[in-house]
Each structure stands twice: as C-alpha cells, then as structure tokens.
Image (cartoon, rainbow, N blue to C red; front, top):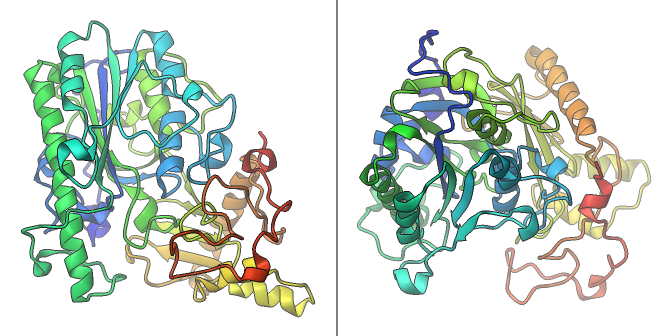
Length: 480
C-alpha cells in the first residue's frame, strides 16, 4: 500500500531553505529510469526492491507522492517531459511517432537563456530537428557493456562536468530496467514484492527477480552520476531530479494508476528542504519549472506550470486535476482500445472508448461492427466503458466504484472535466464518435507481423490490407 503509507503530507511551513529559486540558474540534472513501477522503489514503500541509492537520495530530497506522467509508454511520456505539453497537443500519442511540427522542446527554451542542453543515453523522441540538443551523448552499446541494455555514457558525462563553463541541463536517460532483463541474478523468488493484481506464481516471481536485477543496474548508474556530481564539486549549484518514464507490470500502455503514477524526487542541498509533498503534478510541469529556474518567461501555450512555489514551500497544492492518455494502436499488441483518464489525486476516473459494452449497444442499434473494432474490445472483455477508483483506499485499483450512487457526484464531476479537457486539447475522441484507425510507424492493425507479437495473433488472411485508405493521420485529426 505504497500510496497509503505516504498519503499524509508533512506540515509544510513557509520556511525557504535558500534564496528565491526563480532565476537562480542552477545546473539541472534529470535522471530517468525506464519502465520501473512506482511500487518498486523503497522511497515509495517497497520493502524488497533493490533501490538503496534512490532511497538514500530521497531522504535528502523533496519527494512528490502524487507525480504523474501523461501516457504510460516511452516516446509519448518523454515527449511530454521534454515539451511541457500533453500527448494530444504535442502529437506523439502513438508510440514511435514524431511530435507535431512546430512544437518546441527543452533546447528551444533553455539555449536562448544561456544553457547547454545535453541528452545522455536513450532518445526515443523525434524528429531530430525539434530536439536540437547541444550534444547527444549516445548510450554505450550493450556489446561493450556486456549487459542486456546499453549503458549511460559516463565518460562523456564526466568530461562535461569537468569542462562546463556555463550552466547546463543534462537529461540522463537510463535504459534500465527495461527488458530484456539480466538472465542471471542472485535475488531469490521469495524476495520480491508482488502486487495483488499480479498472478503469484513461481514463473512470475522468477521473472521479477530478473527485473529486480535490472533495477539494481539502474541504481548503479544513478550512483555513478551522483558520485560524479560530488567529484566535480557541482553538488551545491546543481538541482538533481530522479524519475521514471512510467510504470511496468499491468500498467504500461494503460491509463491505470500503476502505469501513470511515477516517482519524482528533487534534491538541491541548501536550497530545497527535504521532505514529502502531496502536491498533484505531471510531467508537463518540468519544462516550465526549468524555464523559471533559468530566469525565462514561461509561455502560456504550455500545459504545465512551474513547480518553484512547491519547491520553495510557498504552496502545498499545484494542479486540481491531471490527465492520462492511452492507446494500443502502434504498439506490439496491435489493437484498438483508446482510454482517457482524469485524477484529482484521490479519485481516478477512466473512460474506455472501445468496450464490449459499447459494441453491444451499437449492435442493438443495428450498426455494423468492424472486425478490428470488435477485436480491440474483446482483448479486455471485463473492461467497462467507465471506471473510477478511490486511490487512497484502493491504491491498486481493484474495486471499480463507477456507477456506485455514493460516488455519483464525484464521477459526474470528473467525467465532465475530462471531456472538457479533451475538447481543449482537440482530441479526436468523443463519447459516441466513430472509432478511428490511426496510421502508425510500426505494428499495423491489418497485417500480420513476422514475429508473434500478441498471443500468436494473426490477421485473418481475407482481412489483410482491408484498412488501406481508412487510416487517419494522428496529427491531422488533432490539429491545434
């Protein structure tokens, strides 16, 4: 019950640890792990996850209990973090695709303010001409590291720290614990945490031991980074942020809390007082925060807002709501099951736009149901059109309280606010609108792939290519 353990906020005083943070122009170092669930951190309640480095770091930092990404999948999450916009607005809401032309990213905002902006490690964002890093330190290939994933380029990072003659923003994108995991591990099956929504089998436990070993590798890389910051005497003028791009088990690709809820831990000795906060934040807040720190003017076009008032403890609340976007088109699963969600930090409301509930409703109305639409709904036969969860008392979202009269007012409020937000984002989805086939870079709906991508699923031969001409461009149908 990781959230329940930390849901109570420490009493936040108006005490400011150092001088005003606005325009203080620190170095900014952001360490991002890949595919690691919130409940797999000791800083967020795990008793068994091998996370001693981030755990110790949290004790020196301000820990955000209610931090969220906007989409629980790699490219969309990173594009949100780097742009300050939600996925529909920045355009990369289908994995592996590009952000919308004209969207600005971190380098566009910080370079004019005199910062070098460096990406070290994994990219998974595009196009390159909209992510014009001062430099991209490419990851060290796994053939060199001898590990299942590429490693962070520590030598180049060390050289940056040694030679930097101006403030910098360094985004360190670790490739762990993303699979493939380590094949060998000293962790025993009985020494892992399994959440109640996961099948507690020996196979699951063995798989989790290998995932834990990959978590340990991300911790080792984080330690190297922290040691380098100390070695080059950068600690006092560097704000360090630790986060993960999204959750993993039964959360990736979805809008469930286990996918969207992420760690977010901020350290700046002498400037940011250690502790915990329940302020509701989202990855869209990172870009306006670093613009604020660098002394720039925050664009009103951004979806996020600066966290500086929270970091200074002048405020204890941030957003009233945060939002989630989910898609399975363009992913390995290759099916249509779009989701949208809204959370006020306690209650989490989800609308599923392609459910069996909807299929049956349309069938009764005499509407013809396309094979690919029905298949998308059948993948999750027990997923209703509307879901709502009380995260405080049900952190793993096991009890759907949608349509419970006790919560009718809250459900109506969240539903109204969700669709209002979707309209403001120019989302192509609406409650009873047409299910749309989206053009994707990879994993087309109507062609079988050379590998068994999803439970040996093969498109019926007579249906191969039948969606040609029906695919819609994601950017066009959500034009801003």
